[in-house]
Length: 168
Image 1: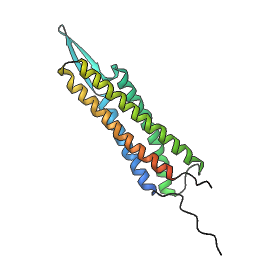
Image 2 (image 1 turned 180 degrees about the horizontal axis):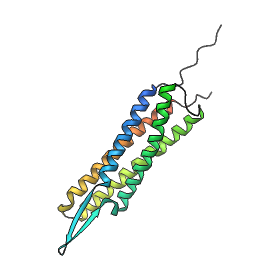
Image 3 (image 1 turned 135 degrees about the vertical axis):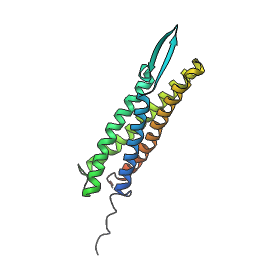
Image 4 (image 1 turned 45 degrees about the vertical axis):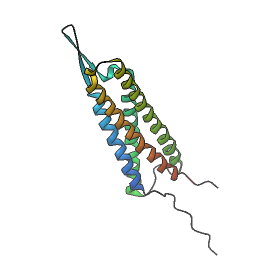
């Protein structure tokens, strides 16, 4: 009698994982563009002072988390494209652990960037007048896009947990 067949190594189709990574990359790219181009001009005694979002530490943190998240997601997207086209994993089964823990780290890293930006925006809103609302709303939009990137990165993390090698 022949032994039972082994279960498939992947429950989630590889192209679904690729699509989730591409969507994550798109959200992060748009978030980076929005927060990097956000600026506000303050007029003090007939002098215009231009303030950019990079003048605030929380927004710098958001930018750095988005850039690091984009770099990791771009790398993983390339690996996913390789897996979809060839059917073989780059690095074998050992690479699944790097994929799993990297996805976990990056997804929560993106969440902290979005949370820091939301907190900074609310503090500035509380301390300022209504003239700065457009600047703050744009900052909230960038943080929201980063949060959507977190959701898709967390979904990718769940998918990569299905790909872990089965240990007896």
